[in-house]
Image (cartoon, rainbow, N blue to C red; front, top):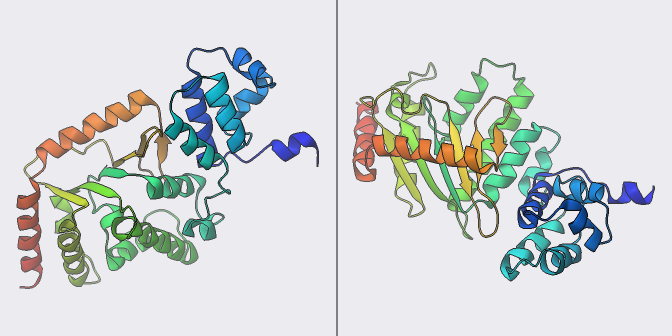
Length: 292
């Protein structure tokens, strides 16, 4: 293996995040100037910033602290630690690396690291809030070509992702907007699916780290009509991420204008949704309706 091959690395999501943060810190400094001060060429720096080359923790500290003069010891250390992480970060998702789409694999890692998650879906209960039976119904009845084996993988991944809400250490703060129309779904398997789903929503809404709002049937159809989206924020210094849902696992971006646009979109939908207390009342009313 050549020296170049040893240094080249698959652009994992966190390696891209490391490179992206280094690029933001570089600011207006020409890449050639920054690279020369490290004894690199601009091609190597470009590949580091795109996550194609791995950079060591010591190189992060030297580059950010000495070359770029970044006055942010906490931020530098966070990026340095991330640069040394093994591929995939060692989480439960490693078992599914070759089973799910790269976009979903990336999103699972980002979601797991997030400090806050804000999400909304225009037609169904969002994934992190779905009950096991609801998850199975949604995935196995999908119109896309999903083999039985793949369906089981996707079900397992979706349910495993939900541990971010109840984990002991740093549970994520979730703000979810659920459309009231989702509660009118009639499943061929019977009313027990929706009954269990409503119970789960009520239970989750009682957790201190979860804010749950219902978008009422009376809301103008423009709210939530642009598709499902998720906004992730992270501890310092990491940039926020916006994700637009699609069948392949979503499209994710750190681009500030895109993130700002979707954040404003979410704020608008939230303003049209019912307050938290009223949302719990609506959930209870629907649950009582399923038991009659």
